[in-house]
Image (cartoon, rainbow, N blue to C red; front, side, top):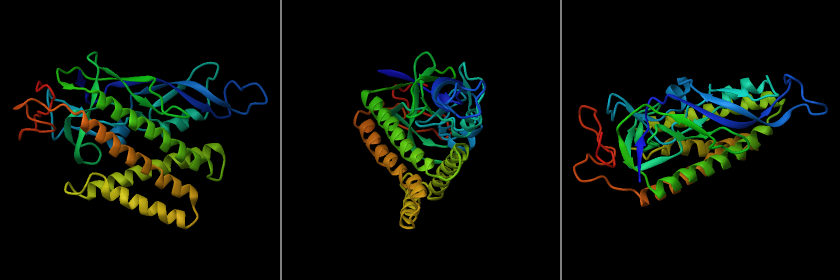
Length: 303
């Protein structure tokens, strides 16, 4: 089947998430509850800053068509996205905490089109993120206790299409499951940090962002000749083993839990590649670009 290629930059997104509402809550819940364990929130993805400087993955310098780049698989809007609680809750400190922990991720890839990653940290070829013909797509959001797919993001209008297979769907699903497992482990580790709930949430969020940024920076430092992500993951694993040996289980869990995602990424790529539809001869091939920067690489060969 065919799908549209999600064009960079994304426009905006909406989702319905579940999150705790920490005290003090306005209006206060009926005693004896000091907090509301889970509550529905409307999340609005519209702040592009984190995607540009912390979590974004796109191809614009390497491949550009119609004056726009392409959003790559696992592009994340990142922190800074507003969450508004639904009634009866009006306000809670969770509103500020969710600005630190928010996540809106493009989880559906198309391995028929792979392009060099520009983004925050340049890297090797990655599959593009797809969109429906109506220029919106289901996205993965930071709901609790596991990521939610109850949201959408809207894309710029484009004429570019690609092939989308059952392998692409399964590859994306593997990533969602892996994120749920990693999130459960890191959240458990974060709950063991001394202090109140707000302090633990802030510490966990800051640690996670710092870790991801450091891994990305190390990957970029490895150069294009190094295996994708190898240097950053190697250093992260060594640091996790050292923390475990030192008896710091909280830090060790935060550093070693992403290994689940690393293994899942290998499986996801294998599944996606196994069902990959090759572009027709002369269409430019997967992830190719002309010297002027105007890319080929669509499964259908149309730009």
